[in-house]
Image 1 (cartoon, helix red, strand yellow):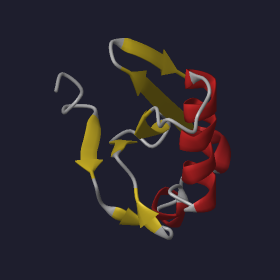
Image 2: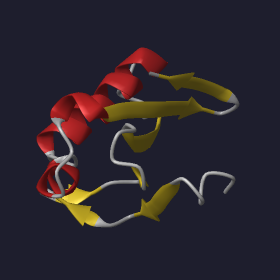
Image 3: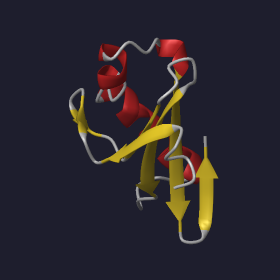
Amino acid sequence: MDLQGEYVITSNRESGFGRYDVMLEPKDRAKDAYILEFKVKKAKEKTLGDTLANAHAQIEEKKYAASLMERGFREEQIRKYGLAFDGKQVLIG
């Protein structure tokens, strides 16, 4: 939580049409905001890359950036990351 001085950190809140996992909203509006979506690899997903792609698809389909944009952030200020897990393997993108 070293970022608490610079960001408002929220989790599992409604935005758009769903609930994001973690959002970091900068207190300084000149900085970028971050949306993080965590996914555990499912049997139907062949690779962690597939899982990561599903995390990104969920961010877009559910419009998780909507609440940030309502508060004045531009699309290019919003960084969207998926974190895919399979046991001890992790893929971030």
